[in-house]
Amino acid sequence: MTDVRDDNYHALLSPSSAHTWLECEQSIALGLSEPNDSSEFADEGTDAHTLAADCLVNGDNAADYIGRKLPKGHEVDADMAEYVQTYVDLVRNKVKAYEAAGYEVQLEVEQRVPIGHITGEEGAEGTSDAIIIATKGDEALIEVIDLKYGRGVQVDVVENPQTKLYGLGSIEKFGLLADFDEVNLTISQPRVSETPREWTTNVADLEHWAAAAAIPAAEIAMGHVRRVEYARKSGSDDGKFHLDLFKPGEKQCRFCRGRAVCPGLAKLTQDTIAAQFEDMTVPTLHPKVEALTPDDLARIFPALDVIDLWRKAVFAKIEQLNFAGHTVAGTKVVKSRKGNRKWSSAEEAEAVLKAMRLKHDEMYDYELASPTRVEKVLKENPRKWKKASALVTQSEGNNTVVPESDPRPAVLIEKVADQFETLADENDDLV
Image 1 (cartoon, rainbow, N blue to C red):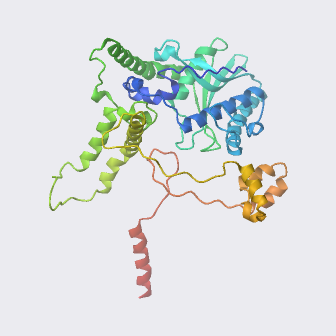
Image 2: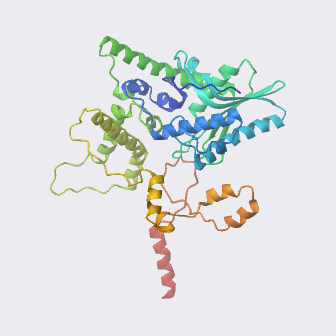
Image 3: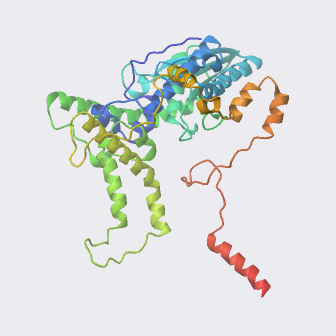
């Protein structure tokens, strides 16, 4: 196994931003002047990846690292250990399964793979979390496994451009080892589902996608980057963007660095709102406006996530400017509400309170450990856990509205009016 990690390099047209530059070629150039600030969630994900890599490279389990501080500042707790172990077990079980089937297996962890032959960016690479190369005689396959530590949006693996780029990069790097028959792409997102999402494709189909979609989009995107960079150096007017070439959407805007200053996203928001009120005359003393119909709401719904992304991005940009001393008109910086009170030193406070002869229950708070924690304590004693688990309850998930493309099955809900009709029919029988 090889562990190759270097946090100092990041390709402009990276696999992780593939949704952005494939769909909206001007996006990367737009984001050049914007800070590439990390977030708490990104840092947590980076630390989870570090933990996962250390486990696979060193042969450890994630629980062995509980209490250890990771490079981005997060301490490994029981929850992180449990989620990361799900991914680690997945990789190890896949290796064992290939070996049991008679394959010779090579595992690569956090491996840099070349993507410059696709993106046109010299020396560009992406970092694949885990790559399994399995060979048996003339048969050979390669599997790319990607860890997603986020808990918000479930990531689909089918036709996923990020994993396809990792697959193409892995083929480019390890193609001399074998003539691969198929490529297995897997996404593990343990905080969303214990079950990984898997998709099998082949080298020819991946190369066709690269030639038909990825390479042409990358050429356009890098053309915009070069144009903007040249304009800044030369002071020309060629650094402006074309409004009609922006293609805002939920996937491409979610992690775009330039979304806060994107005129295309601003125009989408304006057009979405204006389309509902284009017949209104303002001001008017007695407005007569129809309420939005279900059809109106259906037209608005697909844009809500994008509009919310834009709102958050603009607010973050205003915060950044204000905190840097560039006051944005109509805004100001104030102190937020004070945080919760806490002891400056728990040990000293404990000693003082004991000296005051406070009762034990006046000094300490206790609560019953959660089922998750107790299950870990009793993992070596399934008989006891079976008895304890009989007392465990779990609430059902709440209903929520999502796009029709969401893979989860729809909940069938009877119309309220139909429910009243049923009651009326039952009452008629009593008359």
